[in-house]
Image (cartoon, rainbow, N blue to C red; front, side, top):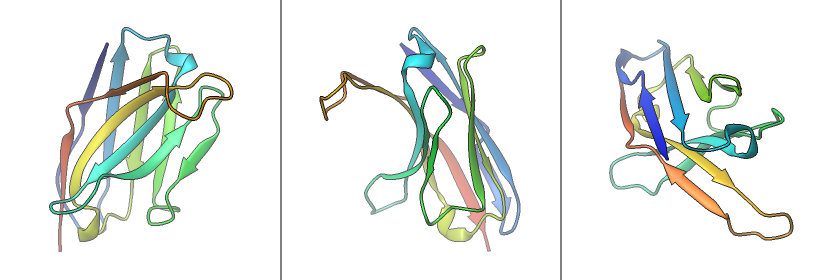
Length: 121
């Protein structure tokens, strides 16, 4: 299984970035795809997730600025980040997670290597 992120970089506050995660080795449509981030000295936190059927879940801190989308035919999930703030600076990780019905812990849980996003003020 591979999750390969791309699109990170340095941007000024108010700017935009588009992160992409290409996945291989899984039945993509069966997985909840998500983006998480980890800033220095902080715990990893959820940014946004999306089920195979398309239902998104977006963190309050980024709601209205970030959009998650997925292309099940291309095994790709995208995070469009607009109106970026310095506090969005973090390493962003792509995640693929699959659950069994009625079981709270994931059956499979895969992570990408992470991509750095830096927002300057």
